[in-house]
Structures are given as structure tokens and as C-alpha cells.
Length: 301
Image: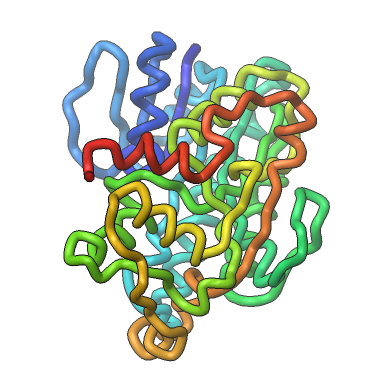
């Protein structure tokens, strides 16, 4: 398997590459960082390549995975930062699609271009699946523009994973939530009633492998666990696994003061189901939140 991946040095990308190496895949990572090539991995700067070099690179790739994008939680959402978040996703996706569309038709080639559950906006307690309509707000706008670029791809099978809240102690939301628990100050963020569409990093990686290998997989898939929880349940379960209290809470107004509009990431409610993965008989290793956290936090107690 020959795999080309953007965003391969990011939080999700690192775990995905480790899994691909186990598959004995040859991986080409597009990055501006400087790394030494290994027996499994070549590193390139995509934007320094000529069109012919880009064509040659992607023509050799069975699987093209696009994870590139500015971290949405990196800083406050000023107008400048919003533009950067959108541009970092749409420009790379557009660049890849332009080259993919110059390649000959190849039924074996799959383009997996990431999106996020932010597409659905704040849906309160409404059940969400892949057929649910787009929501409102900046994150929905980002995902819509991101997906529109990917949908222009031809000559390949296209999969768009809408990724949920990825759980692993080394990054993302879980890493941030764990810090207060170390000082017995852990608890829910916001009202605690909002639903969190979580997924264990191992299951997420296997979802990528599943849609890459299964030729019947095409279109949008929600990459989340089948049992979304509330923020209160998430905090309570972290406390249970760590044997620490989860009684403190960060009110919504405090989040808005600290983060501004970016507080939306933490307080909107999304009760998302991975319906198409369920229908395709994907095997979840971590369906229950407590099992997922027990596995992830076994060395943090």
C-alpha cells in the first residue's frame, strides 16, 4: 500500500502513520518540517514541488489522506485567525484535488479528505447522523468550505470523515481536561449538559483503515463512537477512572471571557452517531466511554 498524507505530523496523523507502518505501507508525508527519510516514510514539501513532481507523487499513491489544517484551538478566533483556519484547509485540499483530477481514472485510488462534526453545529439533544443538515456558526462554515473543495475530486473514490472529539491523553480535549484533575480540581466544562461526540484514537485510526480498504465505502462518514456522552458524564467518568473528584465546573460565561467565540468548540451539543459505519459492520473496540478512558488513562492513575 502506497499512502500519501498531509497533516501527518499532527495529533491524529502521528497515530495513523504508526498504524500504517504496521501495515507495511510506504508513506509519503507532506510537511514543511525537516525529517530524515526512513525505510517506510519519505518527507516532502508539497508546495515546493512542480506540478509534474506532484503528479508523479500522487500517481504512485493508492491512498491519499488529507488531514492538513490549522489547529482550531490554537488561539482566539480573530478575523485574521478565522481566515487562517479556513485557508489552511481549503488551499491544501484544492491543491490536492487539482492534481488528482489530472490523473487517469483509477478505481483503486481513494482520497480520504477530513472534515469534522462541527459541520452539524449546535443540535442540543437531537440525534445526528450523516444525513443531518448543516448547522450554523463558524465551525459549520469551515467544514462546508473544506468539504466543497474535496467534493470537486474526480477519478478516485472519495471519503469524507467527519471527525469527532478524539480521546488520547497526549493531545486534544482530553489532555486539557486532565490537567485540573491532577490538582483535584477536575470537572465539567460549561453546563455539562452538552453532548460530546467522542472517539478513542485507536478506533479512529481503524476507521481510516476501514474506509481505505473497503471499496464500497464512499461519501460522508461520522468518525465517532456509537455512544455519545454528555460533558458531565465525560468529566464524571474521568474522575471515576482516576479515582479523583469531578465536582468543579467551568461556567460558560468564563469560557466566553477566556476564549471568545472559540468557546463554541466546548459548549455546543452534538449527539452524533456513526450510522454509516454501523451499517457497514465496522467493529468498534471501544463503544463505551468508561472502557475507552480506562484504556487511555491506565498509566495516569
